Length: 305
Image 1: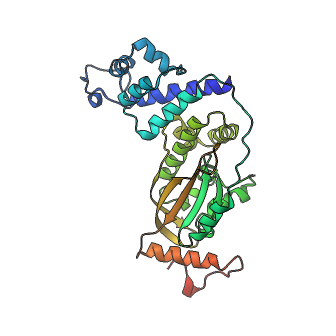
Image 2 (image 1 turned 90 degrees about the horizontal axis):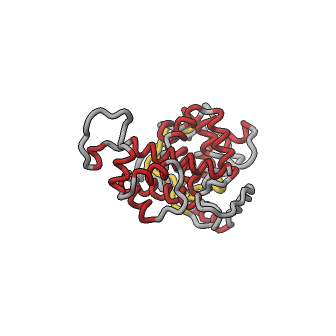
Image 3 (image 1 turned 180 degrees about the vertical axis):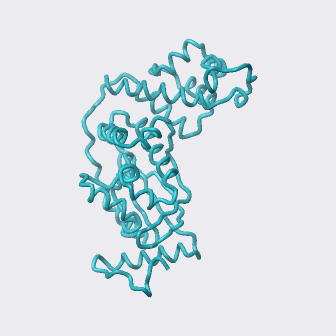
């Protein structure tokens, strides 16, 4: 019952927020007079989607079970959802279907050795694998060096389990210094978690993570309430690394099908060839390749130079 109420609340908040973000002009309607609330009215969405106002009102209240794909498509087009948002809406509809639900905690998926071999072969790129909750479940040496503050957070905070990006960004004050654009990193992190919550609404571990972060972090709570979703992502990201200094890197995330029960992504960070960032990344790679006994860099081998 609790999971079903969560599902209805997610549907209600998501559709209402997307409706509020659209103006009449964006969907070809006259602006009309003053509006008491921002965005489109429910009856306007209903007309554009080809359904009755009563039906759409019921849908926006979270009663999505049994709704056909054609109708969901029409609502998605009317609200101008992007691909990730459309996927999220269909995930919410799938989760609302009546069926027996296992509320047991999911057993962590063991990453096959071949995946670690793949990561280790990428000596000049920082490569790591995350699950849907943004735990780092596998990484190569350069990723562990590049993301050293993320790995250190769990150890210093005494948190059990694997390093987790969400806990790091919202619970570690140092994250604001490490990420050059913390706001963007925080936005993406929450949007990825929101998409995972739509895909696996009965994941107790994910619910506990969201509950923990919502309780202790206003920044997380505000972003979670915005209902932004993201599934596929890539681009540029800058770090102020404690040893390598400023690093401007490009990254890409790819789906990694290692389990039928849990989503995993392979993320690869690299630097543009011929730039100082590539030189710093290569130096960081060479330093980490020498093993744990490596002394601190000398003045002639300063990673910040």
